[in-house]
Length: 230
Image 1: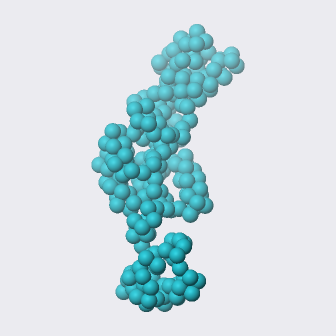
Image 2 (image 1 turned 60 degrees about the vertical axis):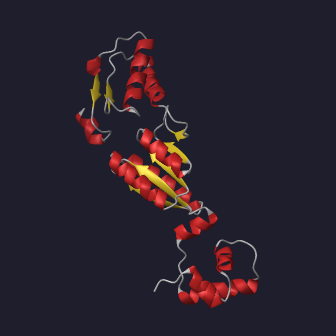
Image 3 (image 1 turned 90 degrees about the horizontal axis):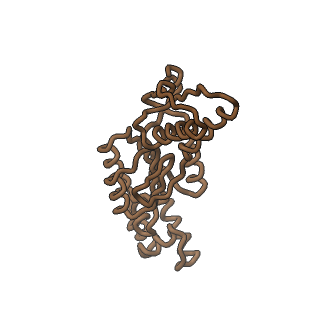
């Protein structure tokens, strides 16, 4: 049998509000009352419902994380860092594997909304209007990771791919190289592919070196085997 906060209050002979205050480390009760409530919780084996508690204190200490793929070491490192910081702050992380599919993305957003998450990390995808509007309706903060949006005012953490490609190309040029190739991802990729190609070409143009399109090799994914094949 799953006991509720009402059962705890009845057994300890206190109000539900008092039990709630004790569970959330608020004031307004004596030490004796606290001992009675904690004893009742232990005897009943009561497990507070995180969502129910979240409705009371407006926080569930849960963060949603949306990732398009779970196969790269890069994503693994991101997950490790996010989980480490969240755990240190006393929060949990719900990881949602969207597979870059819009329908799956929206279903996950709806699920995270039902879980009453405190915030959302959106990674490595283009922030579409329907995603942005839904999160805005949820009324929670969102941060973009390894992506950014020029359309919507959302803070982001991301490498400047254009500048990175420009700097790498410039370095080779300054070493005296002129026949420079580039192994790139999907040429339609707005997040990393297109900015990197732009940086590569801009560096060549700024140093009066003709751009040879045959020196740019595209791949569908950013994986080692794809780079090796290219």
